[in-house]
Image (cartoon, rainbow, N blue to C red; front, side, top):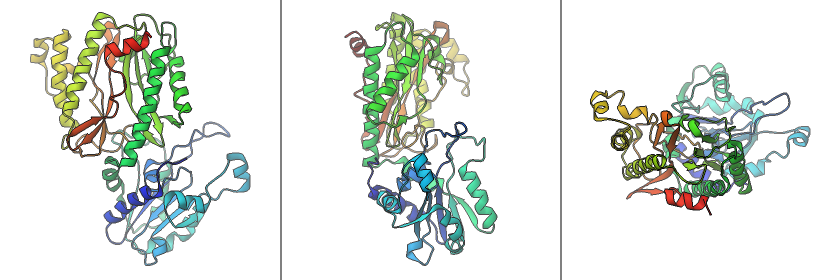
Length: 427
């Protein structure tokens, strides 16, 4: 059940309409269904741009925004799947035209195949066609996905149109979260917090990483979070130091730490949380010292989170804070600092990733490291220290909303102080 109103999606489309130049149309299509084997697909995940503009979670969907068309009814059309009775017997109910209109707020609903019989008339009046593709800076295309195939099909049929990038128009709107979006992210965080409390009560020596993952998944499903927002990291022992460890198959041993990096996806919106906790319910002395150093860096990093900052500028400042903490821990020496280069600062030996990223409909959401922060943007704050020689690493991650006065920590209710974590684990 979609909790966002049709007005939310209408407003999002109005913003795109206002950005489109004269004689321009925009088209956004649904994501592929990905086959898992001969007769099954992986759980379906909608193209976030299409969801943002329509609320439709169903495959074989096309949105056309065409303000240049002289007929008003053809300026905004949603094309949906026309499933046969046999397909519905096997796959279940598919949206009717009335239901699609109620969700999206679009009046003119057609069936998917109608787009290709109508496209000559629909696109004759425009010169520019704006199309959406995955423009996450880390994304690499390894196969001809739905967007790519659709673009090639359009270019073959309409070779003399000008093709433009829609992503820049959508990105700047998706980056700034509405009140409705912030509430959904808060709910995702609340569910994630409940799952973390469940793990604190559950963990003890001899439990496995996959049992911890199962506890988290149980809480997510119990509270109607559709999915994990990303593949969860449940890393114990020396695997704390593997940044994207996802095997989650080992036994958790006494004296070790477990690094948890997980988040619920609720109504397509993500939470992103990291905590590092002791298997035995109590941090060892040096573990606690490192943990408090990471927490100090996070708290200082949060003070810098305000409008007009960028991720690149923030990383430079946080690097200086991290350097101080690593010196105090004895992990770096003044000689290390003296010999470092700007391209390879000494702290990178123990802290090799950035301090945060945008989040929203995607856990690593749209936006670049040079995008100036604005009120309404949400970013993670996730410093860490990783010491393979000591057999452990620590990461602490919170989700931060940029406000006029600076920021609000949306994860402030999730236990993070050592005393609070140990107390909950030993109740």
